[in-house]
Image 1 (tube, one colour):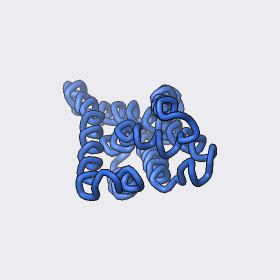
Image 2: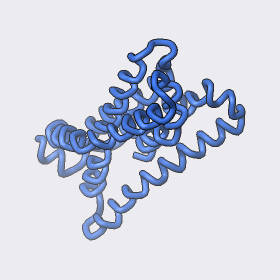
Image 3: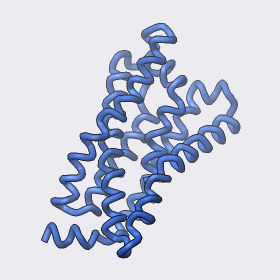
Length: 199
């Protein structure tokens, strides 16, 4: 879940650069507003992701639903790092970017609620609150992780190169986090409550 929040917050942390890259067809202020609206789109669709993937988790199990959400999130983030900008493909660039943000929001909506449910179903009796409270820390840890990667990349390559193309590196790095996440999720056991429900 930390990795999913990392993917989600990268965009927000780099919104000023993304505005110049993908919304260059307008004046700078309008471009920045559009970039923030695209960021907001990810938050707006989160409840729908929770509904869809929550139901899916009940039907096929939490483990496989987690795999779906992390693959959607990780792939969408990686594609943002590869996506041609407005200067290259015109209006298609912001449209594809917004679609990717919506996919990220759906995946995160399913991930967050599913993670809390999964942990609660595995927690020992009398410790569900203590165990699920750790889920609340994942958003903050994901934000800090994204800021550290951005800061490290920006410092290593310089401001000009980072603004030109280096901003893509934190998005591309997410493919390694995706690999780790998929490995973790494949090694997870299905939740006991879910096994009873789906069998």
